[in-house]
Length: 206
Image (tube, rainbow, N blue to C red; front, side):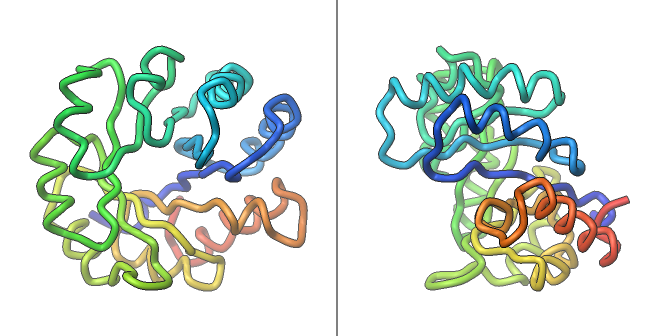
């Protein structure tokens, strides 16, 4: 695996007004190459999640990117999402429930062994992170996975423009970002364009 295949995996803010965010999102997606959007709304009720999916799906479909729902496989399937992101130990049950209708991503935190188990259970990708705090995933863990395994990996949870080069160098196929875009000083579209520009300068994307 070479770092030249690295792409951006965008994570939503933890709370937003669906119609307003859906209006903003096309400008953000037009600012650079985004592979997927993960809808992560911790603590939100089912109605809020459903309203958000209804608002965002037309946008992601037009942009030809995957909409991945965080945590709830049943809801993701019922609402027509493209994928679901679940803890690594939930992959087997999730795959049995959704079959091949949805892609299944596995949150593996800092554990290579958890990623191995998730891949064997049918995960379409594994996700390592956060990259800051405790416990934080080590670059060596991501690099070892990217160099040895076919199942692609995402790394995220605190990646910034200042650190993205280090994570691209691991060979990870995707870098997940959220706060670095939504909480930047500049508007989100400009922040995403700047982030991707930094990735290109490091040789991370074509």
